[in-house]
Length: 75
Image 1 (cartoon, rainbow, N blue to C red):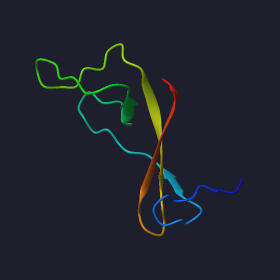
Image 2: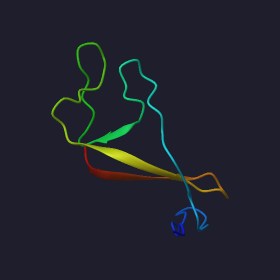
Image 3: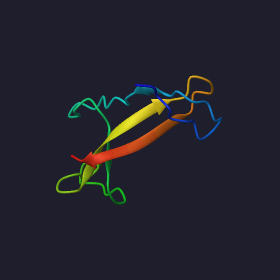
């Protein structure tokens, strides 16, 4: 299967798949997109419970390094 994704910054075709790591102590290892504006809890962390969230698909342009982020189906 040929990767035909095009960089929206420089136009290069063939973006490299990857992911953005979540290294927080209670993180799952992968970053997620969460719907709505950020709300902070009493200890300063982002409130996430009960909010729709999506796995992110991330691609990097091998020419200019620009990242393209796509939010996948509801997780």
